[in-house]
Amino acid sequence: MTTQPGEDRHLDADQADELARIAHDIAAHWPDPDDHHIREAALTTARRLLAGDTAVVAELAAELAAVREADRRVKGALRQAALMTIVPGARGAGSELAFAGQVGVNRLTVRGWLGKPNTAKPSRNAST
Image (cartoon, rainbow, N blue to C red; front, side, top):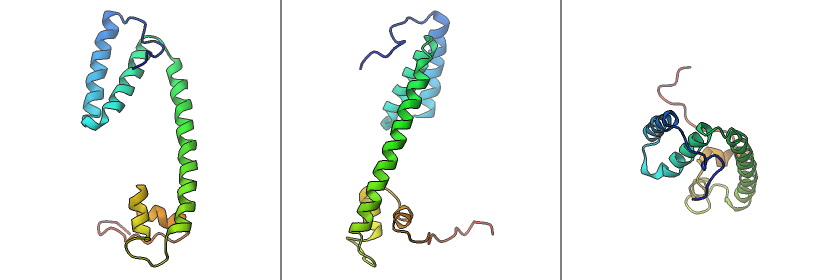
């Protein structure tokens, strides 16, 4: 792991105690073992902020903006792929459902890309 700005600064005893409390909260919020990368990012951010490195907020904002742009670009490409590969009326391979499963989105998202109406059935518990 590379050293981030602020990580080379030592925390005083009070800051170290605060970081331990924050680490406990982070672990409770993301307990799943598969979320270790989220816990690590959150803890690194907490440590940097406790060390006085407020630049981390701007860095994270810039990273989020880049991720959002990448998301838009990928969704545009997937929409085009859906338009060109889904066979109208197909069941199984070539269907909306198969495409949705392949790319990791729900079928209603695919239908939206295809310009089709949302045909989700209302929940029995939905109020009118």
